[in-house]
Length: 299
Image (cartoon, rainbow, N blue to C red):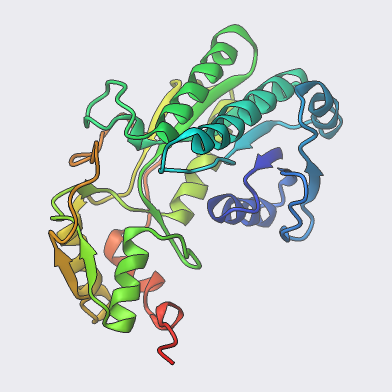
């Protein structure tokens, strides 16, 4: 299998890239200009030239079976600068990838989206943030190609992700820091429900979706990819302590809920034939077995 991959120098995309190479897929990573971050051995690299017209022949020469589009900007602050960044990364770049993929004859296009496009917890469109809005707008572009070209397309709406080597400022990593250092974590009331999913399961979902589309078995425009357990943040903190033997100190209610806080996540139709294999307790125990990386130098 031959895959073009964006986001390969990011956290999830990097793990997916390593998985694809381990399966002996041929991989071409499209990276941003000047991005010299290392890639797994055997991965080809090309910088985004900035136009679909210039990108299309590069992808055509590679002859991809699939384009896996994970690259994105995530900026939750709002304002003109955030808008410029989000539109450029999540819409402009994605539009180039779609056009170039179709021109190159790719049979499938699998993109990453987010469960936060359903802030009301149901199937309706209710973006939590401008980031979510740009992700949903990109899915609208994929629908054109899905309906009107020979390229099969789908977007995976990912729930909260975690895994080894993840240092993003996500709630589980903040819990790990609090557990490692004893510094109290100021949190919201903690009643919001999440479905954390291990990054290895996300990689498997992208591969499963690709194999299904390339085989000619269709998928909806979007499918939900979520972890096996739905728990509140309070329950997640307790499970973290039980899995690691260290209960992080948390001041629940020290912070208010964010605007448009998702209290119950959308539990939409999942990816047919795929289920997460890593249970939450098992994943927490393996990822946070060693809390040393989250310790800080108090000197």
